[in-house]
Image (cartoon, rainbow, N blue to C red; front, side, top):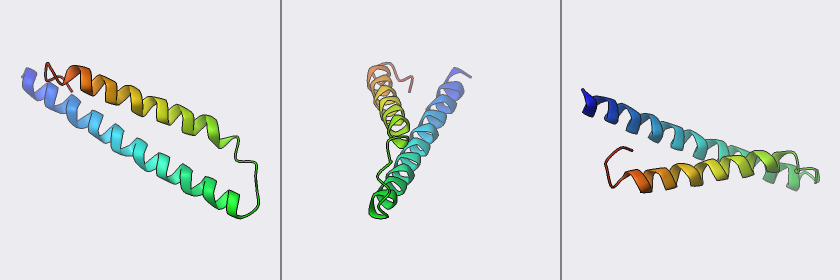
Length: 72
């Protein structure tokens, strides 16, 4: 029972991680298109990228910390 919950949490964390990678790639593509199109106002996208990047770092740190006990 507990192992099933741990497995479910692990799969959910992996899905969140993959989704964030996709969002970061899309944000990077949109930012690149704006720059190439001559629209240099990509600043509103920066807070999103920073937040997503910090979330990824946090998730990786949690994975690293909890890998010793097998939680995530």
